[in-house]
Image (cartoon, rainbow, N blue to C red; front, top):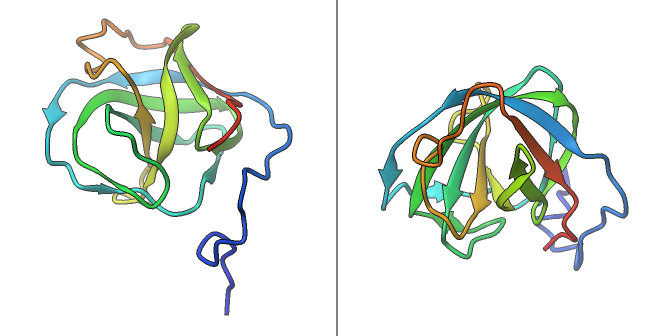
Length: 146
């Protein structure tokens, strides 16, 4: 039987001392807004993102983190991971060097097809509304955790 340290509350702070940046490229730009999406963020604060995987990037203006439910969302797009690593809640997320927010957590509704990666942002506009384009670089870098 597995003893998940996140479920047991074993971590009182972010254990990630140092980690590499994760990079990827937008392969889909999305539009659409939902005030009642009901995404259930998993309790673990981190997920490994492997080269070649494709994951959905969702934005919220809600103050949410691992284990929370997120309703108010808009879609940014899908990213193909180029430089693998471990994404952690609190990571700073940027597109072509422009910070868009911090990683709130992960929803596994569509697994094993893809993760929903939820980003807390102050600008709740879809990828299309923000003028994002295919091929732009999306990056996760350590932000001090949550």
